[in-house]
Length: 428
Ligand SMILES: *Cc1c(COP(=O)(O)O)cnc(C)c1O
Image 1 (cartoon, protein in one colour):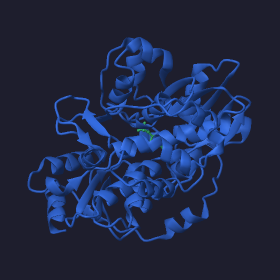
Image 2 (cartoon, rainbow, N blue to C red):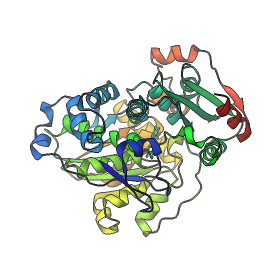
Image 3 (cartoon, protein in one colour):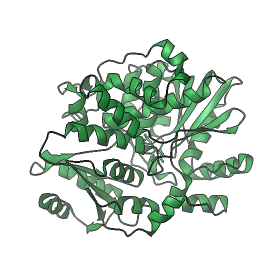
Image 4 (cartoon, rainbow, N blue to C red):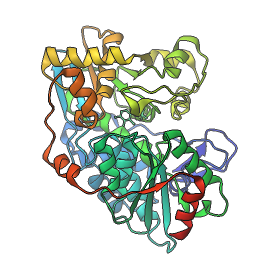
């Protein structure tokens, strides 16, 4: 499969090059040259297939013959070796739980898939590649865990000291092996700036690669969530509406790719916190990126969502068509806390702040009689323990493997300037 840059000023590349480059040289996002729908029979009979079989069928065309079939099968089965249950919340609402992976957030799937693809492509290469990533919380943990033990790849994670939750910090700093955590004296934007400087620094950029959500190998496997939900629901519900808590809009864009592959989905709602660049776009038709505002659903604090351009491409930049398939609404932290309380009161279900924003999206959409709404629960509530416990006024049970994580010893290297990052990268 070939990929082109959405800025149209860079050469088309193979899947392998797209994964290794991350972003095209003209700073554009890569997009597949063609998208071929799956057969109607396959979709009608989806319940007869295992998740591994579905995953292979869905992802295969985007890799083509660049990785042998048996290895792709192995990569996808390792990637999705946990559950993706839809849990009923109400008569016409369910939640798709995406937090059963090792770091309790949905980013595990993309990170694990990308790690394995990069590991495969780097097999013959004797030069080590360093994956450099800045995190405000969830990305770092998922990337570190996904790449743990992958040969030929070192991972260096920058995180802002004191600005991530305890569990998130332990997920970054206790793995060892090929994972190093750099604790930056600053905020997330400082980490991001240092990573950008490294990619522009010709003395070290050659051996670096990124693992953020614009990489096709992190983006595309997220299509699977929608197929797995459909498999569980389609016998009873014909009109499924997905509401996706969105930040960089990679997850929802993957859902829209699934629809393009022929998956019958009635409507998409992108639910955001007060970072409302896309909801405003859907009202006015003007795209005005802003700087991000901090919220309690911090994994979605994004003022300029990188994947929205891919969504527009899926609709050939036709605003009217986009509007019939897609809505987007924004919610405040107060709305979010009220939703967490309301869901808990009505059904006993505990949502994390991101999932609660997804629930609000369904509420705003106003499901019609024959529609079934699914909001994506993108992180386990224990990852946001303070917010959840203070909102629900209730102690949350921490799973045993997280309790043992909290007891592990943190190992990080403190840095406070780009110079220190560069020295570290050059000495390794
Ligand atoms: C990353 C993240 C999101 C946002 O996903 P995008 O693909 O960036 O829209 C939502 N919830 C959680 C918990 C996340 O970690």
